[in-house]
Length: 386
Image 1 (cartoon, helix red, strand yellow):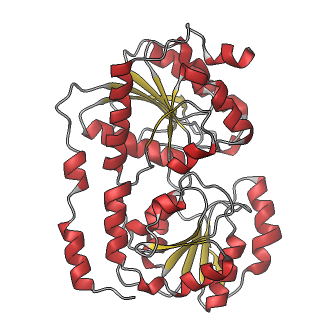
Image 2 (cartoon, rainbow, N blue to C red):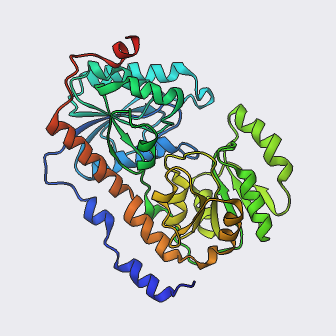
Image 3 (cartoon, rainbow, N blue to C red):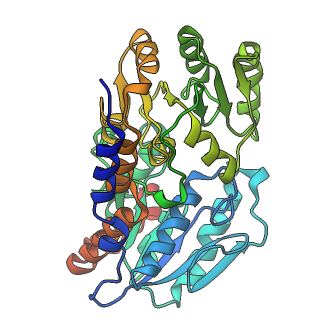
């Protein structure tokens, strides 16, 4: 299989301008939206912070579409939100995972939004939805985390006090008992990622150092093909450091190098020049932002068929979706067969911020037309206590 650069470039240039089509302000009455972000990183984050990056991008696109956004978050506001309320002047990143910053954010957001006159609240935190029943405006919750186990059960117990948006259809299928109201894929600012059709020879792995993300399998695959591999990811949490020291560090060498966390600039450079992104996940990944980011740079994705992967990667067109390690290795060897222009076009069509913003706008307007389900004023806290 091969691609013709001239015809592919023409196809990319002929693609509709997603930003112009979906990103223009709507003629409908603008909405006033209360947006609640997690407290762990600034908006947008300078490095790690996938949820915060999604929220920041969504806020900007909603404002560009003519809406007003009242944003509750942490740190300094780097978005276009007309109003910003910081629960923490400095994000408590070192306390990531502790319960109190989440509880503080929920309580602060409830106070801010009570008198903000918002039409709808979009909550991206874990604790915030517990207070949704006490709001006049309907609450949309995006499910950024796992939908099974204890976290899944928690969202089941929230019941009809909130309307939950999945970030992939695969995520919804894992737990049909959650009160899903739709699916909106995460989005990225595709134009902020450099497109590079001429690739280097290295394989890239980027993500969280954990068994679920399987960086060790990425190293194995690269070595079996004779390609070098670069690995990037944060090591802030104890579990990440312990896994890295026990599993990854012993595998490093001249042909397998750890390059650090990689901020927004370095990450884009790594994506743009890589022969492919290795995504050998071992869990039901609900989305996988790095896949969309790689394709935005024209870089193919080689991924295991788990979770949302088949929704994100067009098998044989923007990468390869495989089921075994041998097939993964073979796909890495074939990465050069994938057309970089097709990768970029796919990212623009499916995962641009404008597409995500349009999807959420449809969710907001749908809820406002239908109204909140009547469950007798029962709050999620009361449901959990029952």
